[in-house]
Image 1: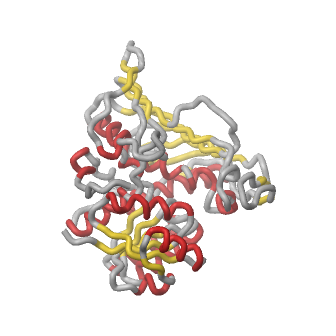
Image 2: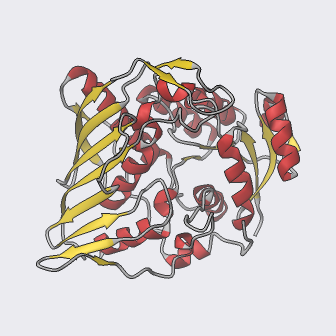
Length: 377
């Protein structure tokens, strides 16, 4: 089977994960990288043995079919628009865009050019989350009626070398970490009907504790704690809390409550982890793992990391003329859910969704194996 050529725009922290893990997958080759900081793209190109291009040269390159947009969120719309205008497919890091208006324009351009748009996160394709999907679709926990989802920490300034953008409009915990949680919930139980939230900003400035800018003060211009409620079209109601104002807590990342059982899910920021089910009048028990390649620990002895799985699925979907799972409709619906939570936090009222999407096709073990070429990261 032929392969599509991939170029990366944006050579920050996340680009190394894509470049390192890409050889595992079929359907594409990463051939070039670019960044507005020429030294950053040159360093990545040398590190991974790919071509260094300017942004303009990469967009005009004949051997590039898909551009992966790894720029900061505020630049996603501009870069993705430029990619589509150049006649190439685009796959964006999360969040896909920062508003419905931006998403509508991306959709218009994609239709005009006849190109595909995809977006991270692809962690919902992980073995554990797909096992949860299998159990729910099989009726193992009955009808999902409600649930909880928590991501709470004390912010990115403790480890990220340049954490400024995390605390500016267009970021905050709900748009930075929320995509993992919202996307996984949608693939598990379907699209959202409406949302409501209360948001707070306890600190107006943060002190960077990482090098090389340790001690520098940065402004906080977006809410850093959002307590939300999501009402799904199927009737389930899920509480979602995202916060960068918490030192420690005892909440599980995600729980779904069904008419027949409760299902505890691992952190949707990762591909693997343990599932625990509690049936009526029984003790909690770990769900037997299945033979899914994206559940196998392959990083640091503790994590399953298959970032670029969504990109591989999109590349093969283009070649095979089928829908891809990390779709534009899914990503845009997640953006409306998250921005709806932000708007509700400001207004005090419910935000009704104007978008919807189909649940992406499940990625069964054989489907996942078909994305791999057998190489190790």
